[in-house]
Image 1 (cartoon, rainbow, N blue to C red):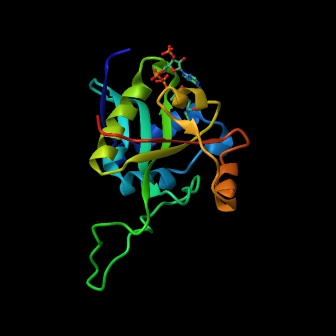
Image 2 (image 1 turned 120 degrees about the vertical axis):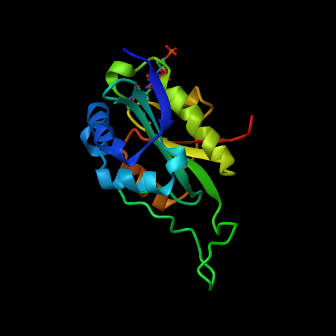
Image 3 (image 1 turned 90 degrees about the vertical axis):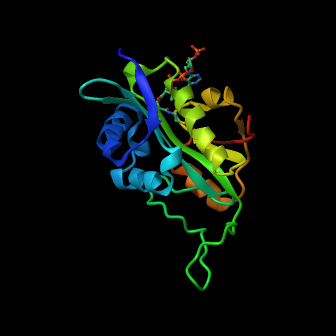
Length: 187
Ligand SMILES: CC(C)(COP(=O)(O)OP(=O)(O)OC[C@H]1O[C@@H](n2cnc3c(N)ncnc32)[C@H](O)[C@@H]1OP(=O)(O)O)[C@@H](O)C(=O)NCCC(=O)NCCS
């Protein structure tokens, strides 16, 4: 396999993202192009892709991450908007958001041919740097398809669900979904 470059995701990557998603996830976890596009729109700096260079660049892996209030979980397959941003009378967004925000690592997937070559870890490190630059100091994710041990290697631990609303969102990810979190510190 030719070498991959890691770069921020582009809207034009979405058709290839959907193909990788179909190869990597079981039915109930499949999300629409619109739901994934809303995550990229929300946070283009923290969504990354691994692409095989060549005349026709092909996508090998992708990672969607974005900021999100700590006191809730984003809906699976939902369209996300920065609902926590409040505007003052003049329509400006205040420098400090109203809610505490965390770096939510939404979806990491590597096409089967590229797995086991460090692509996932490389995408994670690149997106984490952007999250740190944005001032985020904690991270959360929902591990699915038995991937919790993989996230544990990156320092994530299981955390307790905070309330019934968390439980309802988590159940959409399947009975084996695990809510995990860790602190983020600049190197
Ligand atoms: C999980 C996934 C993203 C890892 O991608 P990857 O590029 O193969 O990962 P890396 O190359 O960075 O790391 C490979 C290492 O992780 C280990 N690993 C892979 N999947 C694992 C899992 N589910 N649990 C524990 N370890 C896992 C490999 O055994 C390998 O270990 P080694 O370094 O000791 O040889 C990839 O397997 C994938 O896309 N799976 C399908 C989608 C999915 O379930 N995503 C996670 C959703 S939370």
